[in-house]
Length: 360
Length: 256
Ligand SMILES: Cc1ncc(C[n+]2csc(CCOP(=O)(O)OP(=O)(O)O)c2C)c(N)n1
Ligand code: SF4
Ligand SMILES: [Mg+2]
Image (cartoon, rainbow over all chains, first blue to last red; front, side):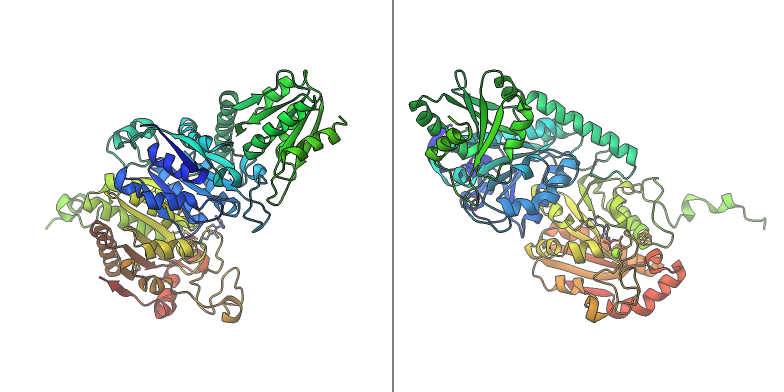
């Protein structure tokens, strides 16, 4: 039964994972997302749904446990924050290369290096452009509320299995740590072996049966031409994802002269900035990418004929702004405002930045 | 008595050795004399004899045996370098009814994957680990492994392994035996028919152990990499006898 609760973003990840029939969680503690595993260990889902929870010895091990579980067609996930996600990159590219569905949650903190435990969005490049080696993409969902932390666990698994591709929920420390009202989903039972056979029976490791060839999960193909053919197949999949899975929210864009492009907690702050700007007669709207990959290129492009400019607002030195520039392709001015190192921008400074950069 | 023909010999009742039905017909890529092929054969035989083909999942490593999945007809996952025990952990926990094993070289297991094997053993995962110690990185052209002997010449120890420069040969198997999560730890070899039979028995016991939920069963096989060692297969076996067994003595280290 759907339940309304006041919960932290990170706790909601754990709670929803149990409710949506996740088979296994594998993690390693790191601030600001440790509550995910803590909540799971407290909830003991293995007694309730049979979900496996393992505290791994490292993020490297955790993502490779995910690789193992995903190889069996199971719904498996991990979560971490920036330094841990860096360690997971090897496993993530192997998952992409072996076309395995899984969910990776990244609750970003400031970097580089050990950086800070304060919130940040400086891992946009890492999440959307690869991070690991090779030509691959993750499906990247960016929640802007605790509710979306819940919604995107189920959505992430759905898309991951639809495309046999790892999905990532890219949250920032604010969304992970803040408490909000959330409507939790109903319980969906874990897939039975018969259901796994139906959904992933053509490739998953379920034990070699007499009536089928053995299954091998691998990302290895030494012969260059066959490896190229495989890469072309991957690229076709990414084009399909780009065509079908773009998600975004447009707020106050109809009459806007200027558009903020922002995701996650910055999108929340920008909504306040829009109110402040409109009180001063500056018509601003917000385009909030929900999928960072695939990026809402077309919706941004479509706005170019109606607006004077875009300002990307990020807790980074300017990463997503590059994708905004590519979408706009020189037709109107694109600028950027950001804070770094774990500093969260205020609504007022965003409005000031808009006025400054666009000489309003 | 008339002369014996070949057809008089090739008869069901004279059969002493048969290719396991689980060994595929793919031509093995291993160098002649390599230990990997022998151990593959033993694993296939054990799985066949236990009748567990449908319940077994193997994890192949990065190393010369990366393509193990081409030779044994079971479901396989191919892991990143050193990470096989992490995959095996999840697979066995999600499938407690299955037989899950990793197959790893000494570079894979004792160097880059040291943390993964230590912790899988420490958690007492109910898996089998087959560890091929050939004291070298075969696949990448014969560089030093953690198990390389002092004085042993490799591509990265061209003047012989020097403890000052490279540290000491690592007895990872003895280390793992110290952990409470391992139940059966043994070191075998595969150079004579008798040794092969012993190794097969050890592998069989290891697979059977996983039903008892006692923890990791770990079978090290000291082997040769004649290509990496730059020796003929015969010389490699001789060298193994003369040098390897002193550092890596054969026999059971732990059996509880
Ligand atoms: C992350 C990573 N680092 C390095 C390599 C290169 N590499 C492939 S196999 C190997 C060593 C394998 O040696 P071992 O595990 O002893 O196996 P063997 O070939 O001797 O059986 C190395 C270093 C790799 N594939 N991945
Ligand atoms: S290089 Fe060594 S380990 Fe690799 S196949 Fe040849 S003999 Fe075997
Ligand atoms: Mg080796």
